[in-house]
Image (cartoon, rainbow over all chains, first blue to last red):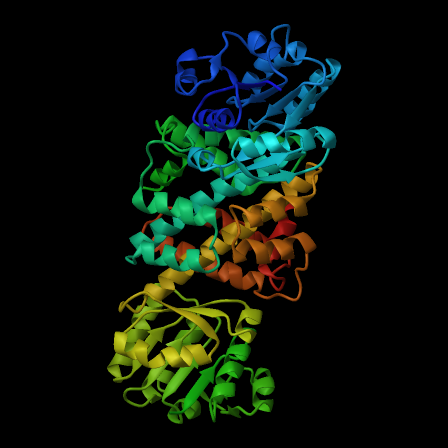
Length: 288
Length: 288
């Protein structure tokens, strides 16, 4: 069973490296070929086009930046769907709109191969530590087939959301919304504490040992207190992209999201102010 | 050492009962005397005025609803400060403005007795289970004296914020802001999940076992998913009162709080729509 990997960015690279470690061969493709160098140096085989890669593989992972990029690599004469062999599987890790996942599952079906939604929770360091959480949805039998692969990719846990392909994408958008809201709230709380003259680290220590004793508060409060906004673990402009998807989905299904809308405005403002390539915790700077 | 207790509301009553259990005597006072009945039936001695209560006691706990009520019982000829013996201690549990705590500490100082800020984290069920977290600030020696009493009152942990009396009140406002923001965010996420056609309980199960594995998400998501908004563990109108304090403090010290401002508007709207006596999780109803 040959495996291919498309998209060797910040998160794609450590995931690809995990897969390479556990398998004889890994074929890789990246639009900007230079970004493939680290994983190729570790033994991956570089292909010069999606079509070339897909024709050599049974299973394709993709981790690309947005819906448009995923459509580009999946659809059309040179895309994954048309060139993947019958019964082949496309494991799509990107955070995208649920409707895009539905469409792409249909496209794959036309060519008698499979699309699985497998968006991931975890920053690059979690990928390197093999502590990723994969959210999956799609045909049950296909998901059973790929579970060992997701573990090889660095998955510590695989969360199933059922057979409707888009379900995991919905769950991912809900989760990213909750994270961005928690970051902004922490930032506002830390700012209030500091300006009121108390030691914000003492406050954070209390809440993260009591009501807020969860990784999202422990990890992000650490970044916020130390104000280490570069290099980006997750770039602010990608955070805006995700919140844009959240708001697009909320509009689509007519769900009110007042904090969501506020986060969209604030992240947009941060990008306009040149913070797009900072870590998304840098939204704290907008309070200063 | 005689102990007095003022304010036998939803939270005051179980705290007073905890103290009564561990001590020979407890003197109590409540503006609406009928609310004192449960604790009096368990053996507490009812006083007919603050002055009468205070003159019998060395240490006074107070759990009243807001800054005005606390000023009322503390200041003036019949108040706690003037009638408490020299060296006596007033342990103030209410969530109030930092500036109010500073003022009241000064008033007590004039009469050679002590004011300690000891706002509490925990709903009535946490009080009954003796799992409260007390946030304390004030003179170090006085805090050492009262620590065993706070444990008797149901404190599982006592968090110290230093000698500036208002520090614990700042930390409490920051914490309540973070809670209200987490509740609204969860409500928005659950609503987005549901309306998008996925099982919101499956999503909540995933997040509370991973990035959001903290009591605030576990407890409040349970209420939000089941939509059990009555009886109120913490009334929405009190949530608004606390967020009003947060915003008053943020204005005072010029700290921007966009989510805080939004929460104030939404809670205000909820109270206007008749949800004031519901649990503050009922803010989820405003999304429907």
